[in-house]
Every structure is written in structure tokens, then in C-alpha cells.
Image (cartoon, rainbow, N blue to C red; front, side, top):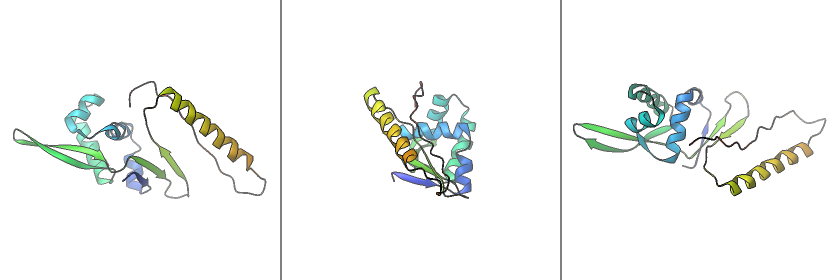
Length: 145
């Protein structure tokens, strides 16, 4: 699945925590085990395990493969979709959050498209319509996804 509309309260709550958002960001690149996630995010395996359970119960991640390591079955988790479209449960609002790696030329092209979109929306403003807020941007994180 390429896109998952995230709108159920348990899904929204699951993505509200910083650690869970970081886990979801790491899983966008590739599947990972609890141990790999703990090492990458510098968190305890027990903490990662708890967050994985919350994300899995919310339907945001799933076990994509298993591997037998001595007497233990190691689970590898992956996202159920590449992009999560976050839709407010009480209002007809939609937000998309995606972390990507781009070369500088592509980043600049997307920045120009966002700027055009903002200008297009502003140009359609009128006094009789309903009020909306456009939130758009492309921001370099300075870190690694």
C-alpha cells in the first residue's frame, strides 16, 4: 500500500509520541528488528518493544518477516504504507508528513512547486468563501532520516 489515511483516534495517538514518529521514520527506509531500532535510536529494547506494540495495534506497522536467531524468533517490522496521510477525526482536514532524501536540485524544484501552490491558493481568496489555512513547506532536517 502506498498511502494510508490515518484518522482513527488510536492511530493519531500512536503517532503523537516523538519516539514512535522516529521509529516510523526509520521504518520508511527499510524493515528493522527491535534490536536494530534500539541501536539506531539509542533507546532500550524494552522501550522500543513497547512502542512497536502500540504502532502495530494501531495498524501502522506490521511484521514483514521473521528470522530464527538461536532459540529466539526475531521479528522485522515495516510500515503498512509508504506515506501516512493524517486526517483529523473531527474535521475535514488532511495533513501529510513524509521524510525523504533528495538531491539539492530536486529539493529546489519542490520548493518552487510549494511556492507556486501557495500563490495559487492566495490568488483564489475571496470574501464570501469559508476560511482555510494552507500549511506547506519543505525543510532540510540537517540530520539523517
